[in-house]
Amino acid sequence: MMKFRFFTLVALVVLIALSACSSNKKIEVAPEPVRDPLALAREAAAEGADYYDSGMFDQAIASFSSAIKLFEEAAPMAAESDSVAYNMENMQLNVAKSHVDMAHESSSISMHNEAINHYEAALKIYKNHKPVRISQAELNQNVLGTYNNLAITARDAGEYERALTYYDDILRLKPNDEDILNAKFFVLKDFVKDDDRAFKVLEDYAEVAQDAAAYIMLAEGYAEANNYAKAEAAYMKAEKLRPDADMFTRMGNFYRANSKWENANVYLKKLADTDPEDSIKAVVYAQIGQNYSQLGNTAKMVENLEKSVNLVPNPRLSLTLAGHYNTAKNWNKVVTYSTKVLQEEANNTAARMLRGVAYYQLKNMNAAKTDLSLLVNDSTYGAQAQNILKAIK
Picture 1 (cartoon, rainbow, N blue to C red):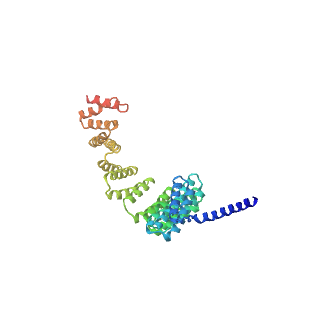
Picture 2: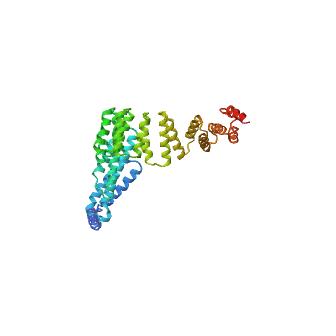
Picture 3: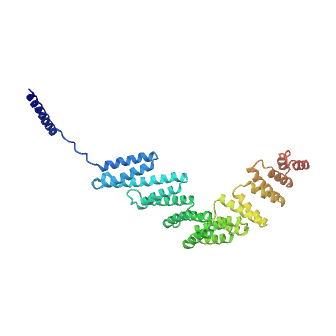
């Protein structure tokens, strides 16, 4: 009986083993999925965009960088419609933009060194990238903008010489950039406190380029530093290169600011001769007249103020003329110019008093009474008006 049970057990084991063998033959093992780098690249790109939109720039850079490698892997097998080169360009520019945004964030909290590192990383991409769909001009603008940001950040960090180096990088690409020359000038002047180097920047550029704008910047810089002689010399060089209305305006203003009334009038007359629009010409004649007043030449002052108000009404100048002619007892002119004032400012009591007196002197009593009766209660001219009205009666 025991022997029978033993054989039964063995038979069962053999049966299980055979059954297992039979089962192994029927199971099919699934093949490993084929690696698709293009699909993976697109997934990484989408992931990077999500990170970027969430302001997680480090993670965005990692995902965009991963996408670049995957697009590179996919390139040999990709179809033209897959636009691999274009997608790689987008990823590279996305990495650069992420660095720029991180630089902005760092700058906003005065982490200047970190900001510089991020700008440098972006700059490296912009400088080394070969355009696919982006234009070279747009890429160049990115390079220039990044250099400018680097210069500003270095300046804010107190690294003035480094800032100057970045400005020099820009000037190598744009030698005639007035804004950058001016920025470099002010870094040297206001931060480095080296006027000699500052003005040398503009002097060297102006001499080499023979550019009026550079001489103007030089002149304005010297004027601000109260170096009249060098400012005047620079303005003179600028005028030889560009004798136009803008230049005459600048020189007229320069000489007026330094109380050089005769010199100012030389250039204001040149400006008037360019025949600008009436609003500008009226201002020019007014300034010429004021300069003659400073020189004590009343006749020329009046001549030019009259030219001004006859082009564009100006109550203040008309009142000045009415007052002058009142002193000169030219009553008709007093009426003319006080009337001009009242046409613009009906409540101007000084002009009304002048006109009332002028009418009285011209024996036009009705007109005199009309003006003077409006002034009888005036705190300034009331008593005088009442006395003349009594004389009329």
